[in-house]
Image (cartoon, rainbow, N blue to C red; front, side, top):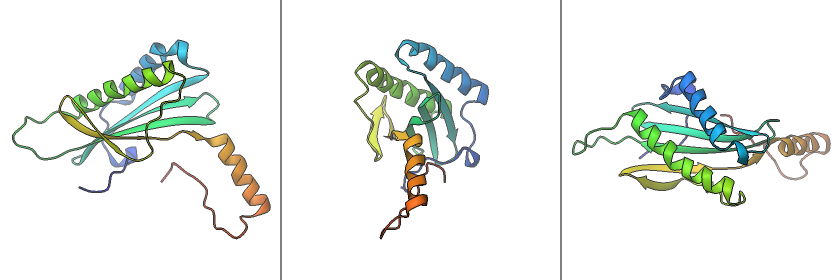
Length: 163
């Protein structure tokens, strides 16, 4: 198996159209409306011959804090099972992570998805999940301090979620 990586949308075909992704995001925002604090969900999806992936991001309206959770299903050529469509796999992963969001938002926001890829199985489908919380506002402030005062003896690279 290759190293797991969430790939940019440019490299993949969409599982769900832009309109469908916006509808799914809107449904999640409506479902959790009373638990959101100036935040919103955004859902992305993609697939190719190697993997099906989705990303569900909870982001503050001012774009400073965001919490993306990435899910990847690695496609294996198994002839003993009928293949599932990318939509079926992505929908299953979305349902699975929706249970997490329910727990996260209802239980004080102190249950986090690990940074490292973790293997999960749901209804016989294996997939991997990782997540990380970022505060872009604080990261930008730190970058400004480094620019102004230098890095000292250490080489410090800016943090980026972009490739």
